[in-house]
Image (cartoon, rainbow, N blue to C red):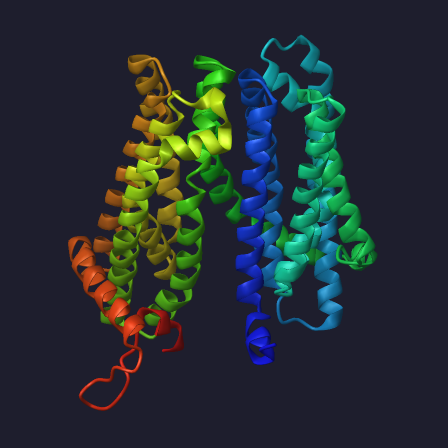
Length: 462
């Protein structure tokens, strides 16, 4: 057994990637099971409900998570307990407020005709209650860089849900309401596991302080705006399709978009790597290096996406059949996936320029961009659905959004940090890709000065 290798793999980065990757795999399996077990209309109702509840939970998570990490990391034991107690107080307060709204929605749900909205209001309060301990436990785990705990909590929650779905299949009780109950039970199990393991630190609640609560709230409120604004894209798309085209169309659309995880996972990973490098270059006043790093990330990731995009676009029908089953073969789901994969080629430019704006201390421009994109998204989607009469109209709106984001970020960077050339990014990225492949195939190759060449993978060591 290679003990040194095991030790190297036992680090926060590997645990973080494992948490995201394994969770994505389990979620994809769950989606595949649901799409085969539930009728198309029920799938649409399920997706609408999950999107609605996730949107409300985004407010809670956006307010708590970043603020907790900022004020918790690196503090002494006494201050740590104060921050944990204060975050628990805020979590309970936010959950209580939404539960009051959910309670009102529960009684109103019987008078609502739309099934998706009815279920969303009916189960909102109970969903927020059973997930509250999990939210705090995840905040604490991230603040302590205990990504192994994040992995365990997610495995329990998502794994139990998948097991319960198979049990429902075995006993022949697969219905939408039973699936909802299984999901609530799985979330409750995740919270109980976190609580029993001592990861929620509920005993620190009495150590809260009014001053710390105010600090956390005033810092977190700025993150809420961006988090909620970003999630509005999904909920606006979901709402427009649900109300204008119906739940069945929503099920088809969601299946096509769900497969975009193949792009989202690497993009999230590389943007997480890019942020500290760009910030360090900016803080040291190394403008040329900042621009070069930005161009290299955009260009290299864009070139890497091209073969993957071509492969997945060609295999779209097969992927849709594997995940959704025969009922979704021949629907618009495969073409929706192909269109979004095509648009994804602009995603590296969008994501990394957004990261660059944060790095040069211009997060307000990103927030302004997101607000404008929401308005554009609603208008373009409504026009697209009205003209085309199907879910391709949403794809039209998404393309308009990505294109606008790239143009906005590019001109913002030019105005506040001139010298960046987007088109040069693709040339630099191509050269970097050739260099990376050469160093991968011939790792001992050295420069004329006798020093080994540094590959893209070694950038973090600089």
